[in-house]
Length: 99
Length: 219
Image (tube, rainbow over all chains, first blue to last red; front, side, top):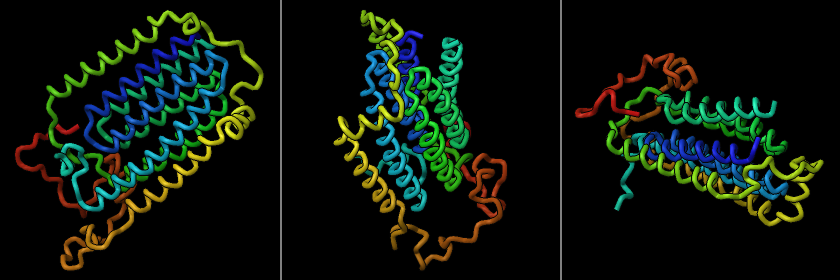
């Protein structure tokens, strides 16, 4: 398959993830949608690595996966802390930091 | 053959992504994401990124998603109502995302790069293999590799600090008010069956909808 097919799939997944971040209000699902966006970026990176025949893009994707794992850890820790304090698990309700 | 595998995997990945966004229950969203990740691993294999595909399945679809499932089961809020959202804002979000997709598609397809329409560089033996990845990580990308390990350490410490029990800040620890003590949970609470709404905790208070909130609105 030509590389541009992969890039279009990647763009589509990224847009679905971005729409989810904008629309959904459960922070767990927002984290999942962030994962979607990071995975779309990974797909584009690996497609470009294949296009150039250079494995540097694959290393980049690997580092992105590490960053995603860190983000999941901290994000889930935050959600558990929110749950422990009996606060509503809804990003629209959690706006005490709003200026 | 490659085209068939590509279309099956691409449709699976896109369907999984739509499932993550559209399903109301976070538990099912996580399961849809697992399907999405497996389809994406097939795409990675087609792009000859063997090691990345294996890492995706083992680390992502395995370990990280189990972490998600634990938290979803712990919170168990699959049926909790959220405040109704503005449907106008949802339309605006949809329009913005559509514009983003059109822009990305123009950028990809209208770039005029000949290589984008091709099948990629000729395959060299060893491309994307664990040996090649490991050698690159320990020679050319040694510094990012070490920084990544530091980042993982910081994230682990941060998660422990965030989720630990602080005296006085959580209602669970308030000894003056016995109503907020942790009561023994009833059977099947905190399980996956409860997270998907198959079993209701009989000891739990009935879900009340605050005044002015729409039953249908939560998403």
